[in-house]
Length: 460
Image (cartoon, rainbow, N blue to C red; front, side):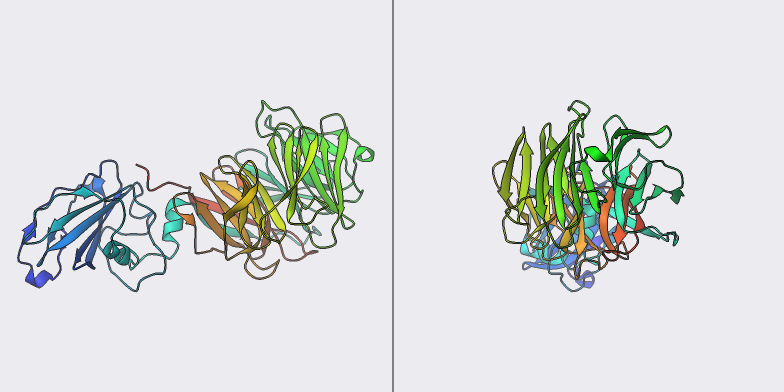
């Protein structure tokens, strides 16, 4: 039997308590306090049925917070907890419910619901012996990474990464090198006609659409091969492209269309392909490093970063045949874009964090002190995972998470040895990250295997 006591050697009274209402919970964190100061903390799993006994030498308060997550996911072990120095931020995610009861010789125990945490509870739980990012990985995802050593076969910078199906990712490097990434490892594909490819899109019907560095469009599958859809002469952008990205419908009900953004010869092009013909939407000069970014928002609508003639802190929206230039908050440029299934259109900045379009204007979604150059973002349940550099463009990327229940994680993780330029799901197994060590350095591949996915510990 676990006993929480202000002074175990001098316990004078024992309060026999029924558990608080924790039906459906997997964890309960219990804090005994006296004179508004924490005395002891215990953790139990309601499914074990091992409800502790509580003793108090003087009158005090017993607080209980219940969570939908198991203790190990919270970073805790069951039983009495060891308290250390206080962290600067909460170490546990928000609970599903809070309760408190008086305890001690002069008290009549009775659980009552609490709306907020007491000072003693906050103090105690910030002193728990858990990892600094326990709050983040409880609500978000947790990964283990494997850096793949690619052969020195002449491949160049990363070009694209696209999910072929639920277990494979096709990764392309400039120069015509293609690799198939599976959970078990990576192998080079030697014989796919039409290379070198610079961009790829997977349609809802499973067909892959590939664009070469000369602007030729092909479609097909790895098994059946690829056919030419349009010749390079039809493309409304420079030949010998350096970088490009493709976005298209994410649902089978939407009409087919491709939005393509390219970078070459210090120019950015934004174009649309409707299945028959190309339309050039924008052409602007840009004389610095640029990684194209475009998001398909809905039928006949897409947003591109870097394509506005008004400046790098604008995005260009194409909707129903019309173009509009939309200013972002702040003064710095955009580095990435994501159409999130629930949060809407998000833009990662060179600095200052992430912005969101609220239907009428762009506003700051999250201020993030680090990393800079948020190059990639990926949906993680109701939230997202993002990565960028905390130093220079090509330093190893720091990964952060945002979940609605916890906000931005104050702790960043490094899974790669170089900066991440592309991030693509490997089914439900994890993610494939393509890395870049410089503007002309060869591509690297890191497999990020998911230990667990996001879970809202505050919802029973």
